[in-house]
Length: 161
Figure 1 (cartoon, rainbow, N blue to C red):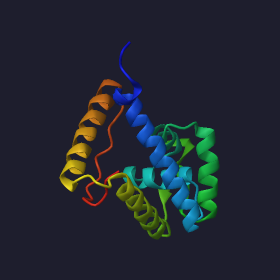
Figure 2 (figure 1 turned 120 degrees about the vertical axis):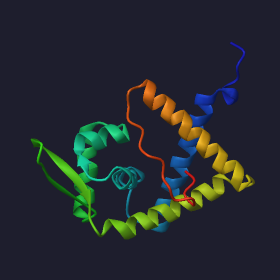
Figure 3 (figure 1 turned 45 degrees about the vertical axis):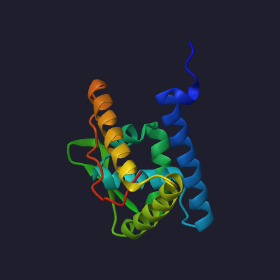
Figure 4 (figure 1 turned 180 degrees about the vertical axis):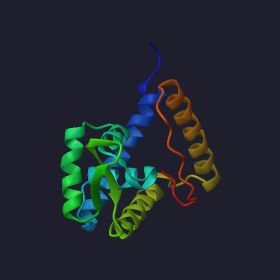
């Protein structure tokens, strides 16, 4: 096995994602937003998916449902989400963003843009756009082969992450 880890696609993607998460967490703490990275991720997933039940959200975030419940409890205390009974399943709840979540998401997106700016330093904008298009193709290929629905890519051209 002569391939070095820095030449392995999965290893590099994992390391980039890990470092982005770490840097974003640092930015969240330093700016006093008052959320953890996981809480911010829950809001972002809800913004991308729209209202959904807790099981769907946990799957989307790739976390255990019990972990999500604690995140949602805190986001509910902050009045950033509401949980309503799921009309299709009386045992489940649909999670929705509140109006108060809008300004918080803007803060989160602004911090993310700062982190992405650091990550993209030295790369021409056209290269970043090309890379994102290629990664979205890879994501769609993998989602198809794993029978997992691929969320529609974000349409905001300033969002590179």
